[in-house]
Image (cartoon, rainbow, N blue to C red; front, side, top):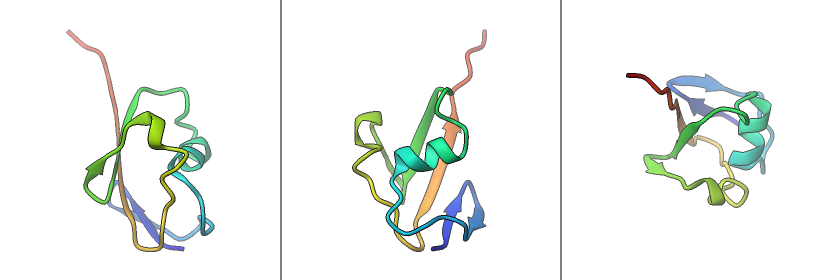
Length: 67
């Protein structure tokens, strides 16, 4: 399955993976992030029910505190 993450194409993900599992595989589970799937921002509670499909575009933005 081909998905695009932050502008880069990846082919290594299996069909049926959800956003939660993707975040785990990318080692981002302990980070404060916002995930957009096909130009729709997802709420964290929807990560486990949002399945990825071939051709999906994911944007992941890490939240950083500053001052």
